[in-house]
Image (cartoon, rainbow, N blue to C red; front, side, top):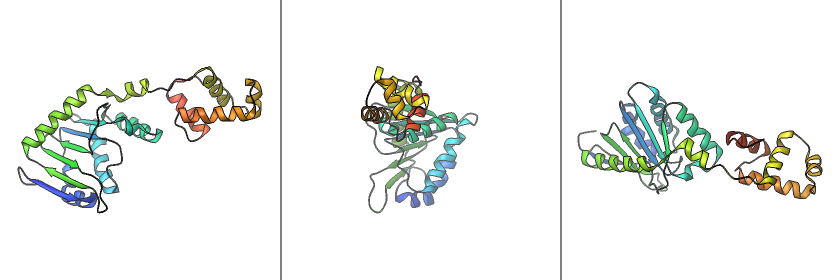
Length: 221
């Protein structure tokens, strides 16, 4: 891209074709703000970003990812962000509303994602320094007030009452539903309803996942 240029591209494929090299060109800093983890639909776009994010552990390189709470909607998303963090990326969660994806590379190139359309998402790519500096300053202001991923997840631990803890313990024991219901002094129907309620609270799709989620949150098994 020429100096101070602003271009618009339509869809992930065109973005990668015209500006994909910019992701790999990052040398000092890669910052990203997004509402959720679904901005990029094409494998090539996701791979280009992932390669640069995974390079965050390299000496002298800083990678920051700022997200809204909706990005933590399921356990798969949480696991992905923990993995990204293990590779050296700094991840924070903002309580403030965030627009569609914004990426700033080395504080010299900016990529803004627009709304999704039938023809694909429109992206604006610019090297106009005034625009880049302005958005980067806004990013840092929101970043400074955001919460570290681990701290946010600790505060996001669901509260389990005595019944919930007993159900979780019964699940962890490997007892049958009939045996667990008798042990807790409730009907089989009531026990299964409480198990279903516990799975909803832990955002789990299965009993196994509920136990795994409880362990990750440090809840008693």
